[in-house]
Length: 376
Image (cartoon, rainbow, N blue to C red; front, side, top):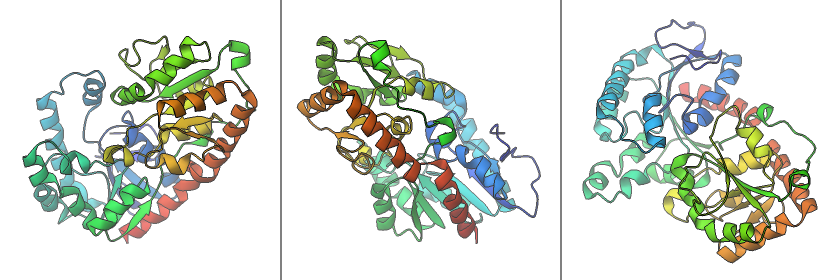
């Protein structure tokens, strides 16, 4: 598959023997957020550094479409995808390094992956969420017994485990990983140009509280339904949702927009406040706070649940607020909604933090070094 950038080459195409050759075994095409952000957006930088990357996503786009619309994923197409991946691995010896998103074969026992990887070149495995909790915290005892330790063993034998936050790094460390690197999920600042922080609410009326995400994550909005209801019913703010289903906050008036990669930044630019509510469970502690980074890259102040990496991204009172209870959420939203100068100040601080710590430009050179070291 060709990614659409100069860095990706088809699986069947010959690569230059002089270049370091990497086989990217992502879970999805660039349409999958985790695959796009943790892998595909780095491909141009890797190409500039002389690394040739061949891309081989596991699941087709039709799987994502079914996932996001709540339809049943066709077992036949999944089986075909797994068979294709196993066939692809026959070419693994032609590469210097495998770059794996989470695992080769989801929901297969470790023995299957060990059999494939034993004769393969070194591999890097990447995690941007606590996928291992799908297994070790499954409600099904058989899944816990057979798969509970699978990803620990994948990490243990990797040349490098790349993770998005400290929670994931600690799991890799406890698994006995040889080398661990924390690489936050980052944004391409070229898509988030710095601009004067214009207070759009002055021209448009009420300040806008915005959320962006995928349909399978919009249930977190239920955690802040009451604070948002208070803001709306008292004419203190309006709501904008990008990527949510019609069921999300269905009892509240809200502007609803379909998510598209080419329009996501323009939607965020119209927010006055960006929000990221989360439940405090092991799964959420493994998340990488990407939507917060997006808001801040656009110069927007944020309000977020104090869960996992959110505590590192949000500096309370500096670039946003951390809020846990409905009262804290209401207070933080109201404070920002009524104070345009505060919004501008916190938004500028957020943009500066993204430029320092969460940019593609700053992270790509480190990734190049890590991949080269893993291959050697």
